[in-house]
Amino acid sequence: MPSKIDVANRAALKLGTEWIASFADQNKFARAISLCYDGLLESELSKNRWTFAIKRATLPALAAVPAWGFERQFLLPTDCLRLDWVDGAGRSEYLSNFLADSTSPFRIEGRNILTDLEAPLSIRYIALAENPNEWDPCFLNAFSARLAYECCEHVTQSETKKRTLWSEYQDEITNARRMSAIQNPPASIPDGSWMEARI
Image 1 (cartoon, rainbow, N blue to C red):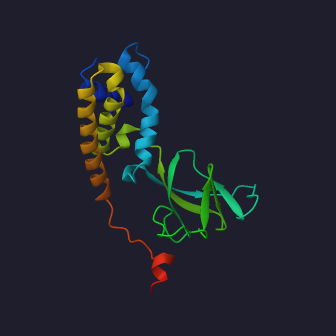
Image 2: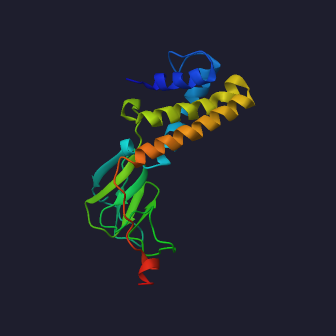
């Protein structure tokens, strides 16, 4: 079962550098990987609807209401990287129609969802999946390649190696996205106002 250190050492293997036993090890790679690991993981997870990172939650309304515009607000879960779907909103925030929609049933401001929808609010979101054992193997390969690319200049000072790692990352992340996508049936997109106006 892979650990964070195992993932880091996969990146070390790609760089041809010494493996680490801890992120606190005193060498170039350990210092670089400890600096970038968490931030890169959040970035890579938030870029796609990874099936292994999707969670659902039912949120209670906050006691404090928005100053104007909406009747209530809900605090996003602490591990939420990206909101994917809100029950009752009619469509995904990320599959909106072609025109700017000023009548959206909700807005995200800071860490809150502002809406007129009733409480409790059911949502689906992309979570911060920190445990490598929960990842799809293709995502693990892609993320280790991304780590290697990020640390390459500091560890190897080789532009050629860095270009090679970027190409490897692009191939791996494409495979990972494909594998994640085929695990779910196709999702239909409801007609928005742009389409409805032409019916």
